[in-house]
Length: 374
Ligand SMILES: NC(=O)c1ccc[n+]([C@@H]2O[C@H](COP(=O)([O-])OP(=O)(O)OC[C@H]3O[C@@H](n4cnc5c(N)ncnc54)[C@H](O)[C@@H]3O)[C@@H](O)[C@H]2O)c1
Ligand SMILES: [Zn+2]
Image (cartoon, rainbow, N blue to C red; front, top):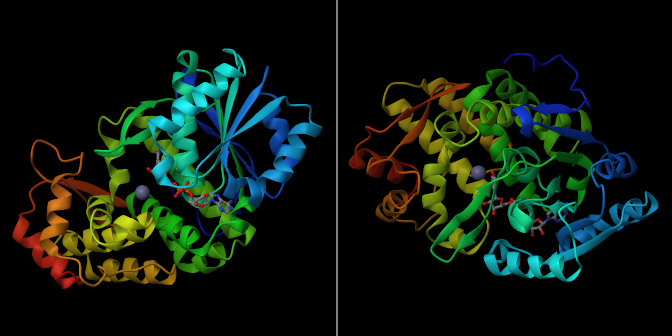
């Protein structure tokens, strides 16, 4: 996995996600709505059902809708409320109502035009409407481009927890126009880069090196570095999913930083607002520091990780006022706890992680306090 060396120019060619008969392309565009729509049209034998929200549609939908019309794609748009709180069975149900009332058939194509919330919800609807209709992802956030739109996890939240109702259902195409990020707010743009940094740490030292040199330019949405890091992230997610489509093993490495992150998100202000990427950033620092203390990761590499996260404008310390005990409690309720033991994804070097389930709680509490918890 070193072909992403610093000098190579990133390619705009399609990237194949290899999953046997469920294989599909991730295609990249640079402000090229007509080309994107032409690729979508080829996968719409009949009518298309575009799921989005008012925020995204007013920022990016007008051109997309006009291009769909000009290309002669017969489509309807369905608006969902904006935010995680709309990723529910109620929203799915409202979408089924629309699909049935408007007599969509099994030859329908559902298109998610939005971030991870829209993608997860629309994908679940596509997986279940008439036992499954074709599904296309048009991601419009960094998280959706490098993470949620690839790999086939779809679903909705339940009042007892996030993502508890869902299905594995692969899209037929992921169409990534990097220009959509121009209207995304800073908070979500930076947050998404936490996931990109994650791919470097878990899988690809060359991506990590590249980010150390170019993350600021990529964050400014300069097309060359932005393409390079999004494409490489997609490749890594696709490679991991390709080896473990249904989360039997390897896919767990994608949770690097996330055990801590989910716990941090379950307390304090992080609960109220969407701070996932920011929590992942702190979680990666915590996991790296824990690995150092266990003698499996070098202080020099941990310092590089902290520096890169800072350069990307992300936090590296636990927000003031969070209690270490509360965070540990939050970790215990993580659905990925295996037979009662907390499992951590820890780096052994930049580009490689292992799973450890032998870390004692007092060591975790001390770590959290050293990182700013009380
Ligand atoms: N399926 C998976 O494998 C997977 C992986 C990671 C995350 N997720 C899920 O993804 C969701 C988070 O996704 P997200 O981070 O994309 O958040 P999001 O979908 O809530 O989008 C963030 C915000 O940006 C707005 N927005 C989106 N695109 C925009 C654009 N181009 N211009 C202006 N505003 C825009 C949205 O309306 C929203 O307010 C969570 O529900 C999470 O569970 C799923
Ligand atoms: Zn994440």
